[in-house]
Every structure is written in C-alpha cells, then in structure tokens.
Length: 146
Image (cartoon, rainbow, N blue to C red):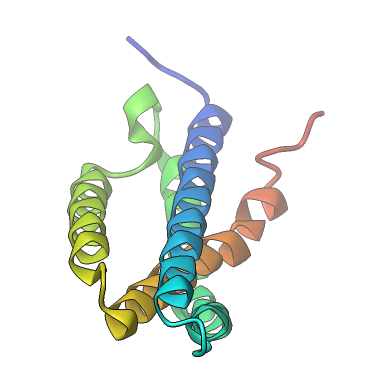
C-alpha cells in the first residue's frame, strides 16, 4: 500500500529540501532587513548575508552534501519504498524541533539588533547550505526528464 518508486521518494526529498531553502532564506532576509531598519547606520544586513553564505559554504562541504548523499543512498537501498520514506522519521522529529526553535529565536530577537543579525545569519547559513548542496539531487538525475 502506498508503494512508490525510488525516484518519487527522491523528488519528494528534493521538494522538502527546496522548501527549506525558500523558507530559511526568506526568513533570514526579513530578519536582516528588520535589523537594518532598527539601526540603519550599521551593516547588519550585509554582515548577515556575507557571514551566512560563508558559513553556509562550510556547512555544505562538511555536513549537508554528506547528509544528502546518505539519504539518496538510503532511498536506493529500500526494497519496497513507501510514500512516507523520503526521509527517516528521526529527520521529521528533528525538523519539527528546528522549526519550533527557529520560530522562538525569531520572536525573541525582535527589537535586539545583535540578536536579529545573529538569527538572520543562522537562517541564511542553513538556507544557503541547503541550496548549495542541492546539486546532489541534480547530479543523481532526480530532475531528469528522460
């Protein structure tokens, strides 16, 4: 019941990955803009983006590429893939916890310039790492139209 192809699971994994890219970069942009509006004379918005992308590149290299490859290999190893198996259940638990923590940090940072810049940088670093590591989906032919 609800068996799907390996490719379908990879497409679902990629879609969730790209949703994370969009959500985190959008949230990071909004927080960085709020910091800039709070203290226009400072470079918080630029600092958030530059530091976020640099840290994102490092995270891509040492964490996200490995994680993405590991999940693609796990999907390939499934004997009878089911619709909900595009990530392990532990991933979904961690994702919920990260969303809740991110939401809390965003609310707690309001009105505090340094905290806003820090949370924006964190969001941008994770969002950019997701984006940069997403080439794994393309390399594995997830989006090939053959």
